[in-house]
Amino acid sequence: MKATATRPKITVTGGGRGVVAHAGARLLADLADATGLTSAFSLGLTGLRQRGGGHDPGRIAVDLAVMLADGGEAIADLAVLRDQAGLFGPVASDPTAWRLLSKVDEAMLAQLRAARAQAREVAWAQHAEVRGDLPQVTVAGRKMQGLVLDIDATIVICHSEKEAATRTWKKTFGYHPLFCFLDNTGEALSGLLREGRAGSNTTADHITVLDQALTQIPDAHRHGTPVLLRSDSAGSSHGFLAHIRSLREQHLDIRFSVGTAITEPVRQAITAASGWIPAIDTDGDLREHAEVCEITGLFDATGWPQGTRFLVRRERPHPGAQLSLFDTIEGWRHQVVATDTPPGNGGIQFLEARHRAHARVEDRIRTGKDTGFGRFPSRHFAINQAWLQLALTGIDLLAWTQTLLLDGDLATAEPKRLRYRLLHVAARLTRTARRTRLAIAADWPWTEALTSAFSRLAALPRPAG
Image (cartoon, rainbow, N blue to C red; front, side):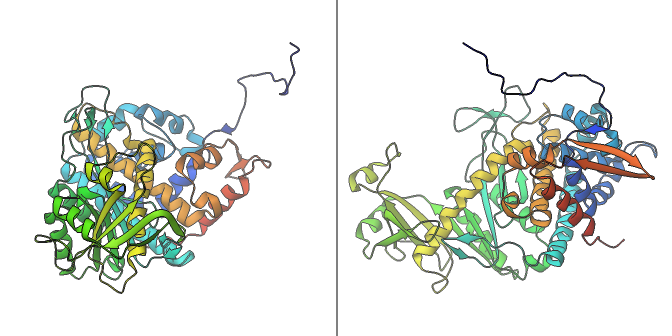
C-alpha cells in the first residue's frame, strides 16, 4: 500500500518562548474578580490566612473553581494554572490547596454560599445593565415569565473508600448528592452532598436544597418574580409541598410542578378519565401517539396542598420502555404531574409540556460531573463538601461567561465545547511598554468570539467599594 502524506512534516522542539495554553481560562478568573467573587471569598475565608505573605484563601478557592470550570478533575490539575504564572499570576501549591479545603468547616461553607450569593447579585445586576432581563425559559415555543428551578439527585460513584460513601439504591457505591439548578441560565444554585444510601424523596433534604437555592437568588428577584419549582416524583412528598406552600405566606410567588406516583386510586381515575386531547412536543407541535388529560377531582387528594391539580400523560410506549402491569394492560405508558398552577395560566397541554422540560436538569448534572462533582478528591467528607461548593462555583462562572460575554451558539454551548473552542486555546504572551498582551492566532475560528468576550468583560460595571 502506498503511503499518502496528509499532514505537513514537523520538527518538534522545546524552545518556544512566550507561548501559553488554556488562555481562555483567564476569562473565568477575571470574571470572578469582576463580579466580586474573589473578594467575597477572601472575606469569607479570612480566618484561614496564617500570615500576610501567604496565598490569599479566597484567591486559592477561585483558582480551584476556575480549574474545575476549565475541565480539571483533581487538585494536581492546578499545575496548569500554576506553571503559567505570566498568565494566571501566583497560584498556590497542591499542599496549600489541600490545607485550605481541610480547614473549611460548616461555618465556612455557609460563608462560601453567602459569597456566591453576593457575587450572583452583582452578576445579575451587570446583566441587567448590559443585556437587560435574564433569559426566559422557553417551553413548547412559548416564553415563560419568571424563574424556573429544577431539583434532582444523582449518584456519584466512588472507586475507593471515602467517608459517608455507601451502597446506593442502584447497588453501586458512592454518594447521592441533591442539586438545584436555575433553568433560565444554567447556574448551579445549591447542592447537598449526601451518603449513598440517602433516600430519593427525603423531605428534609429537599427543603434544605430549595431554601439554599432561594437564598442564592437576589432579593429583588426572589420577592418580585414568579418562581416555578420542578422536580420528579422524589419531590412530591407532602411535607416538601407544604413547605413550598408556606413560602408563599412569606411573600414568595412560588408554585410547584412535580411528578407523582401512580397509586391504585390514581389508576382508577385514569381509567375513568375522559376528554383526552393530543399532547404537544417541545416546539409546540402536536406529539404523535401522545395524549393528556386532567384527573383533578377523580380521586381522593387528601394530604395534597389545597388547589393541587393532577395531569396525566399517556403515549404509546417505545421499544424497550419499562412498563407497569397497568401500562401493559392499557397499552399506554402513563405519567402523572401534580401542580398548584391555577386554571387560566396555561392549558393542560402547556402545563404538561412545561413539566417535561424538567428533563433538562439531567443535562446540567451530566455536564456538572465533568465540571467538578463527578469525582471527589478526598477520603474526608468535609473536604468533599468544600469541593462540591467550588464545583458549583465553577459551573456558575461558565454560566455567567455565557450570559454576560458570549453570543450565538457559544452562549448555549455545553462546557466541553467551550473548553475546546475558547478556554483551552493557545496564545502568545508578550510584554511591551509595561503592558502584557495576549495574542491569539488570527486564523483560529473563534478568535473574534474570545477577544470580544474579553472586551465585554473589561466594559462590565464593577461593584463599588
